Image (tube, rainbow, N blue to C red; front, side, top):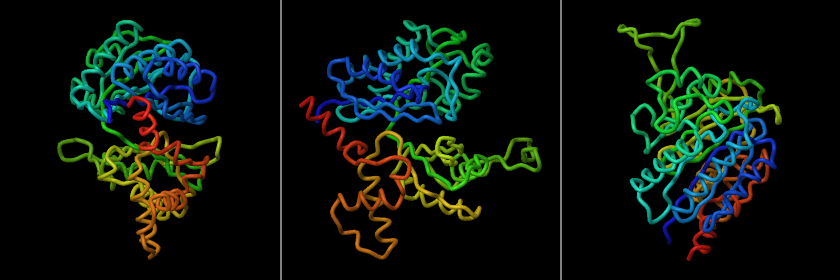
Length: 351
């Protein structure tokens, strides 16, 4: 397989598809890059774009996309359910084949430096590209979101890694990094309560929750807040309400599906929902998903039903789609949503 790098930028626009098209046009204009997936969300007002190709071409396409987003997306008029810090909220690079994580980190930092220098955008580096430990976590990098960015940039502790330490009202800031593959996964609940969705999210995410007595956080003998760990490792989660569909969701990033597989996350949300006396109605994958995540889910649900899991791969995938309600929000088409199927097209393009 040729040397391939993947990029999954998240743009703070999910409603005006003409804006997204103009951004992805810039990506596709870079020779050697293949656009794999475009996944807009209206309520989140956010679009996740996936593309891949030779490393230098991918980095060039990423810069072009960030530049175009800065031109087209005015954060002063932007709102949505998903946390965000800028027109290009986050832009991770992911090694696929023939490139190490160390090389990917160098490319991410080089991209971050160029974005800060040429586009005048404050940039924080996260995950493996972070310069300091506390910035590894994306949620920490965008604490307070766009609305509190102006005061954050006045704090010397939060001086950007690259770019100016001053507020760019139009573009906000961006977060650029290098990471392994993750699965963005949302489970739908038959309730409109974002509070209940948030309660489940706090109980399952790895970092857990801060217990309270009334409005006060419970603290230990030294005055430090106590934290109750969540039930799922390698899981980040929040809860929100999706007005367009009239449902609440538990929105997760599964950062290591060998630790917490897709089906285990689904089942844990289902159990927590049942304990609160409501149900899950389906789920959705944002962007692409590795094939093994769906085949493992298919085997799990067949065995749960007491059936043989020794069936063709395509049947395992269909069982997973049906059992987790992946068609609940919109059709889930394996050829368009499974990473290996899309990467095969990339490999063929560059072989």
